[in-house]
Length: 115
Image (cartoon, rainbow, N blue to C red):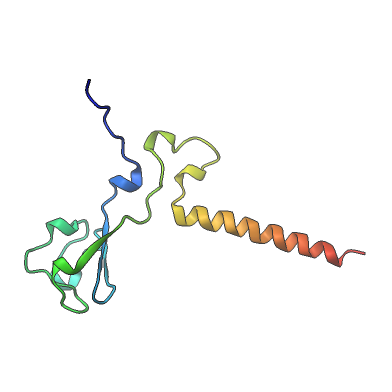
């Protein structure tokens, strides 16, 4: 029996970012590297062989994959369900959840001002 195909989420399909272990510079494929003539959209594996970190001149071997940024964390077919929350990135979801929690706490504390 063959194994079922593994589906990938939109975050897994997005091109990953790479961080320099020496200085913390993050190479984002959507921005590229204008100083070295690397056009936006160039993935890390497609960088020229002689490319180095623009901050500290570290080699490409000194970079590690830190995942993608700004992509929804769900599957494409699920984006239209719910109240639009499925289209939010993980950072936006955190802001929504903890922001609502903060407002609820402020509302609760404001009840102490009633007589």
